[in-house]
Length: 131
Ligand SMILES: [Zn+2]
Image (cartoon, rainbow, N blue to C red; front, side):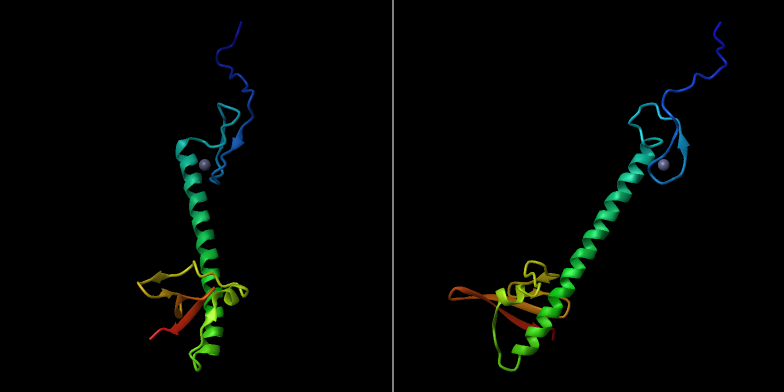
């Protein structure tokens, strides 16, 4: 006779939900790592959020490098109204593709605006401080 009250031992061991909630549950499939869809969605959103924050940190880091390089060349060039090849700034980590915003003429960093002008074979950068 089979005792119907007796719980059949599940072949899949219990596990803790992977979303970080700490709830232990009985998986119905071997590849089930979340308690339910709600917990799976939560984990998914947290992961996206983390990636977004990571990306923002990287962007901000690069913008700060940009500003540092712009600062150096702005100070070097402002008295003489010099232009520098953008190549030169790039050797110091400057990335001209990353800017906070732009208008028709200038690209903006935290503290400086710059524009790129083609001169012969070179692309030069003209830097100005915020007014
Ligand atoms: Zn969970």
